[in-house]
Image (cartoon, rainbow, N blue to C red; front, top):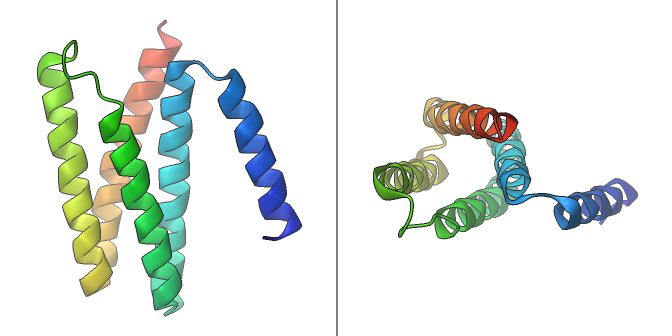
Amino acid sequence: MSGYDDYRCVDLESRATTASPYQLVLLLYDGLLEELERVRGHIQGRRFELKGRSLEKCLGILDGLDGALDHQEGGELVASLEQLYDYCRRRLCEVSVTLSLDSLDEVVHLLGQLRLGWEAVHASR
């Protein structure tokens, strides 16, 4: 790990320990979107092993977001988010095989919109 990576890890840990549940979800979205940009760079740079590792991280973050959903209280919204996360996971699995930047862009767009929505919910509280 480089010095920069060490700094990022410490910074993330300090933000996570003081974050509200809403802020934690925003941190997950931010990390996911950053990692998706790394996937893009790895595909463009033909660094396929690194692309695979980055996609695994993305899938893990999506699993974390999905696992944080409150199925008892969330109703239809939670069911829709669960379906959307599942769709994004399937598209990322396709990206792993096809190396389609268009498919990657679709996932980035969807998750970016979710992040904006979550940020608006957080701001309204």
